[in-house]
Image (cartoon, rainbow, N blue to C red; front, side, top):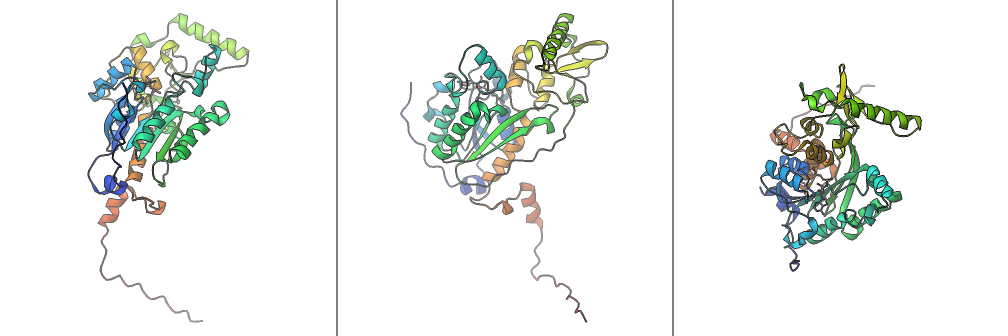
Length: 372
Ligand SMILES: C[S@@+](CC[C@H](N)C(=O)[O-])C[C@H]1O[C@@H](n2cnc3c(N)ncnc32)[C@H](O)[C@@H]1O
């Protein structure tokens, strides 16, 4: 049942909310999966006031780790029932836009992108929440292909909805997680601000850790591929190589960076196979997947391997969102219209506060007169 829409009281001026008071930034975690955004924004000092995901296994993992069961289908929650918040976070479903998702839908004769009635229009649920609650900022995440989907039209609609229709200033960037985890994973991030604010995405260096840093020393032998599956994957790859398409499985050693972990990793593990001495290759264990996505060691994996692979494959890389979260929070803590030159990090602010200012300016030696 839809409740009567009542606009929340206008949020106080940002400088008061984010700068001087001790009030933590409130964020909402939409399409929360297993809480990658939540870890990142809590580390940046935020407080989660609402979460939603309709997958019961993701809800189980989320509840086990954060002590709160997310609300279900976002369509079943009246927008006015969502609490007021400062930052909206959403890694909205990407299958309608991902290359794999689009080709699968096409092969099944299904619609994709915004024409996918069930999943494609979820962006508009986000737009509706932004329109009603007017949070000071948002962070959205999706697959890299969102930018090129349908010849750029999908991204154009998203961008124009956020900027022209909703009035946010939007910054976007494709970031590869390989600088923080040993995984090549490119994702697009859109960061928006209600008022004009200067924002710089954090810099991610080109080089990063290698696979060896996340591998378990003695993984259970059940993760080693059976002869049957290994033969199948090799034959499949050979067939496709001969036809000049696809590159089959992704065999890696501890000195490598893996391909992108996908939600279908549980099927055959073909995108990331770890070479082993005198044995068939093996899959990653769920704990290794958690590490590949930058989750902390304390993160509890409480579901079956199949569900765990799906959940990590769908998730965000926590340290990537972590750095973005820090930048967004720092940006919100600046006075409105702060010039980029004056945007200091917390460490820089502390440092500059400690600098003693002497009352009488020190005298500089007089420049020597040049005698020509
Ligand atoms: C790409 S995943 C997001 C993962 C998340 N960012 C994380 O860190 O784990 C998208 C999520 O949206 C959820 N979802 C899809 N449609 C939904 C809906 N209508 N209402 C609520 N959640 C939905 C899926 O169950 C899935 O967990």
